[in-house]
Image 1: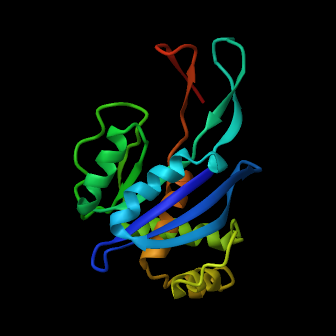
Image 2 (image 1 turned 180 degrees about the vertical axis):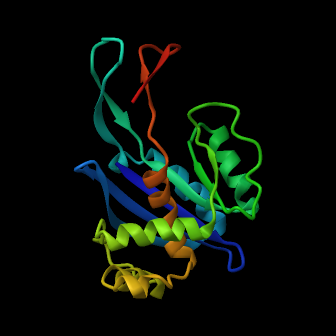
Amino acid sequence: MFLLGVKVDHDSAAAFLVILEKQLKNVRNFFVLRDARHLPAAACQEEMAAFYHDDIYTIRKRVFSQDRRPKKDVSARPALVMAAGEKDLPVINTLRDKGIPVEAIFTEECCPGPPPERAGIGKNHAVSEQAMVESLNQVLAQKRLDVKLETPSPFTPQLSELDRLLNASPQDRSGITAPPLLMAAAAPIWFKENVRYAAVYRTSATSVRKYK
């Protein structure tokens, strides 16, 4: 599946986005960073919506019912995961109102607000930046993250920093800082490493059954 990690730097009014491809191998998540983007913060919401609806990042997968109903192939759209703060709530809520799920990873210093009223549009998670960085650090140490850009993205030295961390020793990784691009990568990795996946088996437009 594909994931879009997002971090908005409100001081510079810039948004940082990373596209990750995740594969499951031997019951472990492996990630490939496919693209990294830098754009004005004002364009972030539109870019997130366009990514979610882009057929390039939609995959076909087989799902199974736990009550012996027939297996079926469904389209699985990408996951949007935002390293968020209070200032990001308008974008998150607007996308959710449009039916676009957003997983919002809030730092512990920021109140994430009430949970979404409807299921299936993403959740709010209260997580410290340190915890997200530690998840990134662990995946790097286990060589489960690779950088294979679809197109060159020399727009920021932060990407070079991530590439350096891939080849650093564990001692060097212990001092990872959290610039916006690294947080954009760390948020979806933390999410996939720590939040158990539960999807929906739909038998009709109005009937929904859970499967795992």
